[in-house]
Image 1 (cartoon, rainbow, N blue to C red):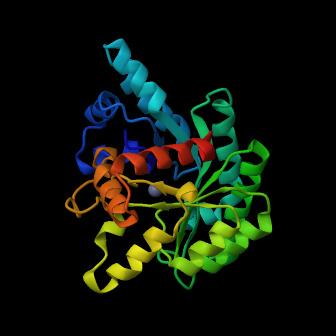
Image 2: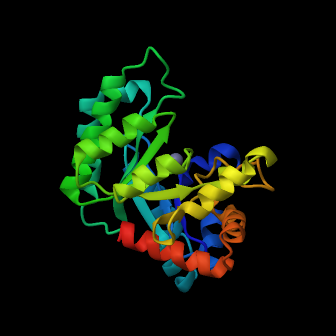
Length: 276
Ligand SMILES: [Zn+2]
């Protein structure tokens, strides 16, 4: 019942987790929505093949149906140095991958893409990073897809990119800024997605976190795992899976004074509005 709007199912094995049993268990729990995000220009086909292989092997027909209907995919290029250096080539490859799945309704967004000024430090190609982002916003507009944005230590660049593109829509995934920055993204019509990292707030910063969690309007809030990363408390430091998102829902529902069921229903509704 708990939607996960951002995870990386093909990375689970690398953290010692069996994706087959995770997907089966998600389907068995009737999880309604799990979005697998892309990071490389050429990874869409391998991610869809991987998931199709798992669902095809499920014998029970009702479980198979649940597993295939919960999954969604995004395709995008994470801003690492190589992708930035060869950005034009990579965007062409991304287009080719997307064309392969033009008729697959599960493909519903561009991303993750954006800026990472934590890993891309001072000597990085800032202009190239912005161009890589702009090209993906253009592609999203052309396809009428929303965009899943990765933005770390790069609020100004991200907001400028979104404003310049005009008419884009999407979500700031794994949101890591404060209330003023959230207001700026919300004013552009964007959604804010919180990950398990909200559960990490230290006592001294808990007020700030709570204010942010309460500030995001109900119709613009999404939740995600970013699995296999960022497992929520009490699993912090362990590999994450979409099965653990319940802890983030409980944490956020508690702060917002909602039942976890109410929060789950509203996040699912938002995911359906944004991703179709
Ligand atoms: Zn991610």
